[in-house]
Length: 281
Image 1 (cartoon, rainbow, N blue to C red):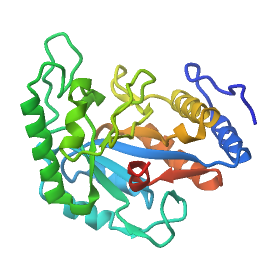
Image 2: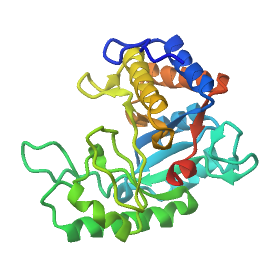
Image 3: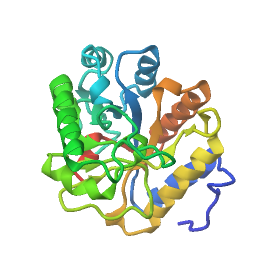
């Protein structure tokens, strides 16, 4: 099993490097798991339809903004992505089990910035009244449950991937069982009853006109996190998440995701994690 990095996250990696990392997982008798989150869904759009077609029968999680979610979105999802028997390539699912392949997570409340001037954007920054935060989260969860039924998971995706640590104890009290943001080695442990379901690689370069970050950087990030989980304690390994935004997804991003899907499909030591498997960790 190789422990010498073949690619460098800063310099970039190539597809054979990812296959080699999957090979190392297989040699260790383990399966590398990935998952896919897409943010900012509120209504049926051509971009969302393209995303769902790209995903095919893979498990996909949409972070939906409750305050702006349109009533026609659930019917749109049901038409394009109905509940299907789970393919064997879904890690954590049983063959033939029926479940929504497109799940919904709560993307805050209204994706509104409440941070002080000069601070990084956040809907839930330090200093906001806890009562207001609790009210928005409660209303958002109820709204998604009403619209999406079993598709709606009790998981919070804070806008801009920021959620002040002081509000974390509120989550389980409100019935929220998972928190999904951007993975960080500095993230504090979550309290019992709350599952961390982070993404690791954002495919959008926000400081470069929101274009595709590039295959080298994306693959380098994937490999870096996969390797860290492979070499660390098995009980601490988590699915490595990719993050997309369908409203700004360009052809280069879609092409990368399509090739990633094909690469995972061809490798016996790689699989996509279902949302249910993430929440059950």
